[in-house]
Length: 248
Figure (cartoon, rainbow, N blue to C red):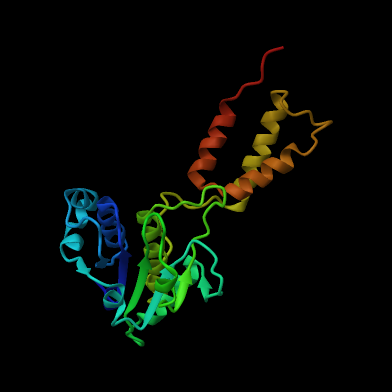
């Protein structure tokens, strides 16, 4: 695990469902994190938590349980609390993408700051007092018609955004590169195919050359967007060659 990943802590406050603890452990391990702290969970340890943790039992075994919220965040230079509602007094609020960028910057090798991402109770979230001890609030913009978000899902969203920001800042975030099994068709090959296609459509009666409308324009646009490779063009040419005009 990279050092900056070790500087990110996930704090769950008064979790009532032990399964959510196991699910959170699994979620953060998926994204490369391991620091999970529980503030007065109602039930822990629990068989259900271990079952939900699946392959993240090591995270669960190293999970710390503390008596107070203050203890959970005491050594953190940046504390970000999850908030699902507007506050009477506005607080610095960020979305998950910006949250990830800020956490990555704070936990970088340059700053070396400890960061806490805090999640509240399943039914009520964090209290105003708890949120006021946070430097920032983060809000996940869910569907307003169905905004309720499971605790594990919220942990997964933020853990993912932090991971992506960290990988990008370290230069490790790359697009998936795939070696194709055939080179792309050259412009000449594609043009010969399109001419062949037009001739075949006319010979079968599918396309009336007197009233072509925009058929070939759309076909050209489609194949230009697809950018077929040489093998695919050869297959299509073979298909067209196999098409015989109907006997009159």
